[in-house]
Image 1 (cartoon, one colour):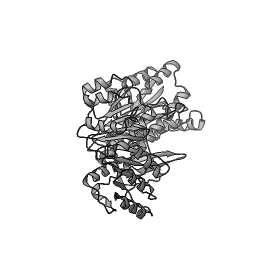
Image 2 (cartoon, rainbow, N blue to C red; image 1 turned 60 degrees about the horizontal axis):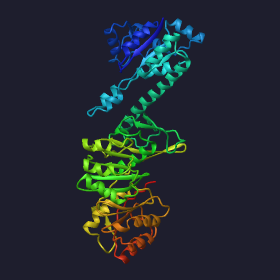
Image 3 (cartoon, rainbow, N blue to C red; image 1 turned 90 degrees about the vertical axis):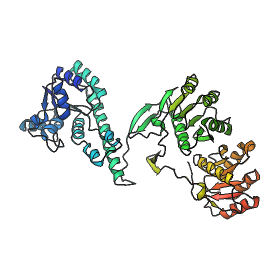
Image 4 (spheres, rainbow, N blue to C red; image 1 turned 45 degrees about the vertical axis):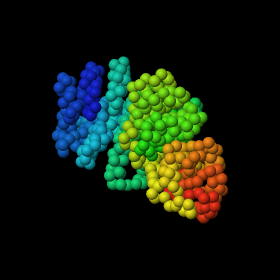
Length: 510
């Protein structure tokens, strides 16, 4: 008679699965809570200690780590020496293993979890049985996912065994599963002992969505979510309406969310191609949207919108006038949703804005490797600026400088932002020289220069940018400082009566 060993944390469907295995000629070995569930359902089972001749001990920590279990899993049916060893030690083959693991992830997600609780939910016997069975996929069927129950049962019903191809696929899934499980444990313990740069980087993500294509139609792509979800992220967003998100949508939405978290007041971010085309704040989300729209009413067309307050009907009516790809907000009023959802392709998403201060590391792929760095969440406040010119900035200019400095952090380098106290009015992004970005930003800001200031994400290597800005109406500048030619830039600012402050912190974004 064939033998199946069943021990699962996820009990969904396990009774039916076990009953059908019995119908296909299996006897069931089981343990702990799984055995109790099966026994109560009237499914005949054999206990682990009947097989091993050894009692469970140490609160269940030691029960399946035994030669009669692992010998039955690992013994090669095609080697006479293995079969003779099994006979000599009264080890019966185990033909199927159905195991899923202690809920370590669910445990560490609990708010008040203790380290002792987390450690107790590290499964040892389960991964060991899964790995043994998966290694011997030539003879053993191993099931870790309830979604595979039906496939396995169908093959047994049709052929009295599973195919080698199926066993191999299931084995590969097991090793992915146990690798991800171990990666979570490694991450948890590494954080606990505060190792910043471990010699091995173990990462695990869950498939969230297979995408239609990547950046271009000929590129395959998929979207994976961190195994420990981050609430303030596009991955945790709930899509209420519209087409499926694309690869480029997801990248743009992520960039817009990073900008929105800089601001606590009602704020709207409009973004295209990983750069903001408008950032606006106001007393209400309606005012903020109008400011973001008026910052660049041309580029916002086809853009991504993030609003950090509920979208009300008045704001939705303004949004409805445009073609937009995505609108993300904490919520939409019923009337706003009804109106916006009339556009069948417009993606409407909600997510939790209450915990936007994530300090996760950033991971970027390069050919043959990964780059890992802290996120750039450093925020320099106006009270910490160093005034380096003869003229002091006014209170109004300081507010505008602080706004512009928050915005320029999120523009591709070389980055220049021209802004007033509540709105970007000109953005120069990604130019190969800084004065080029200055010219683009000021050209865009031509008719909105009242009260405008300029922010540069990195220092001015020469004084030409300062001179150009001053000649075009800029009266205050914020920059990190740190160039060997800072004195030239300061002298140029003094020549034109421009106030300039240094923050001491650079914000390149490549």
